[in-house]
Image (cartoon, rainbow, N blue to C red; front, side):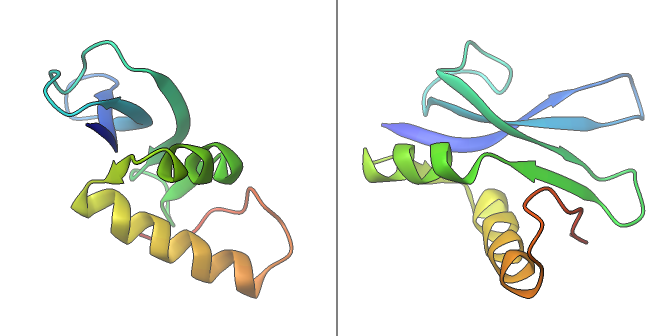
Length: 92
């Protein structure tokens, strides 16, 4: 089963995340199928950049978002309805 979840990158105490499509059984930072975005919680507001078309494609193929990704996707959808820019930072 494929999952859409966060993979942590960055230095100690300086988290930065990649949004990845990955097999459910793989390790957090294991080999992913595709990187479909980034999430940086250290900016104010937190920056979320997503490839919405690729996320929709993988979800149509049966990929399930993790709980955290489901929240981020919901906030990104709400932010995209309010603004016309695709890559606007949203608060998380």
